[in-house]
Image (tube, rainbow, N blue to C red; front, side, top):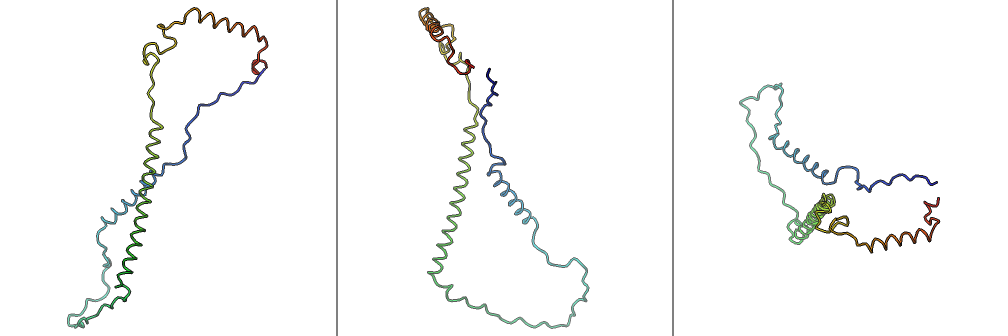
Length: 174
């Protein structure tokens, strides 16, 4: 006698643990927006002390010295070089372009993965056999097998049983 085998579970779709990467990016963008909003609402910084002044007010007869003219130092000559400015502009443009390209690639990849997941998880339309059309079902009362076909099938089945009295199937033989 053979052992009963446990039933094979239906195939299930394997999901990775954790939320999708798109959700994480949205959370980071939301946090960034919240911090920017909080910084904008805060207003201008105030450096005045909130405590009462402990020093006496300044005297009124004090003459302050006049401000003197100060000159800004001249920039180095290398800053005026147009070739250096052009090279730095090209390097900065290349780095910025690569960053934008990487961002576009990540966004497009995530969008394609999202659309593929939606397509794979879509509900499939199911129809009954009668809805497929007339005569589509083998159990349809419109299509009946003829008598010759039935007799031929029964005779072939009986001949197979008579020719092989010992079962050839390993499960049945056990």
